[in-house]
Image (cartoon, rainbow, N blue to C red; front, side, top):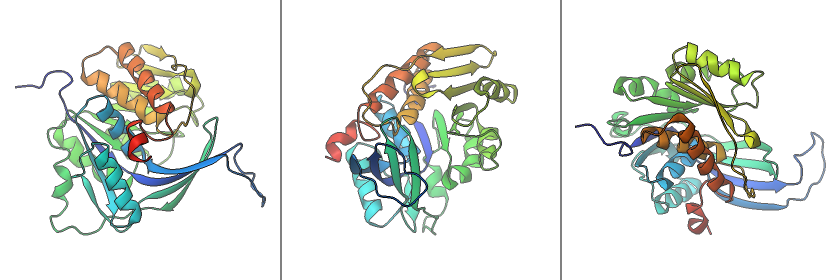
Length: 292
């Protein structure tokens, strides 16, 4: 018996991290100098954590597959995600946990410094342990990461629709190409694309059923499988922090699509979900109390 709309679980595969955020009045100039921070804090990061938290916040069942080390950062990640209500079974062993130092401005400009990045380690129960996360999922999200790359073939074999977020793809990066080729639905940002609409139409011509590009404060555009262009405006909000807003938009569109909403309604749901996240300094408001 098929699941009712809205009942399907989403499997998210990619990266989680422990982040130090430093808020500046401007990004540093490329020269030795002194600069005062306006604020700083530590929090859970990673595009996959952002999507999983936003999906769970919408009431969607979710599984998260990522690599986390047995170190201080890893313990903080597990504790925060667990207390936020996410299942931890898909968090697999790594030599170290991913850590970032994000230099931010109030306008959302960001420089991300990777302080550590995990590699896979041998596990007693073998690689099949992570595949249970993908089984019977209504949709699979493959985020840009070594973990996401490794999961492409097994994800295809499940037959579930694959959603991919290319972030600031420039249209030619070799690392992004396998993700793009595997995607049924493609998301990206306009940051490095000369012609976002043309890129989206190219995705549809190559076989995607939906292609979406976020435009920051200008909202987003999407091209459906029939080549029709759709637009959605951003929801006005007093922005606290922009980290995770794109992931929340993605999650809102995905959740609404699985619930059977039209594309225009799904895009509106994505904009509303992003606005929720823009009001918090964390990836999702649920972390406000968890990381207080």
